[in-house]
Image (cartoon, rainbow, N blue to C red; front, side, top):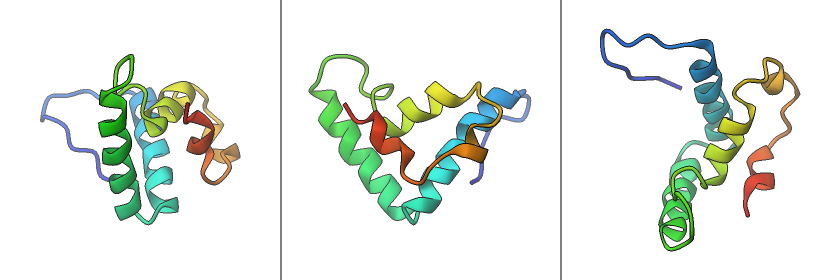
Length: 85
């Protein structure tokens, strides 16, 4: 994936790992289906309790594992499905 940031932004390893998890999700869903599911799930979660963005399964997987240095080495395909409530 490509990460767009402002010119003076400093990106730490945790953020890069978080975004790399999203890249793995995108690849396994052939990119377009990732974005379609992301939007669909976000709309559904707008009407549910809590923060819609933070409760999206893709985000839950990424935030839960962004500190784990070996997560991407051991991640199973479609691991984000476990994070759907």
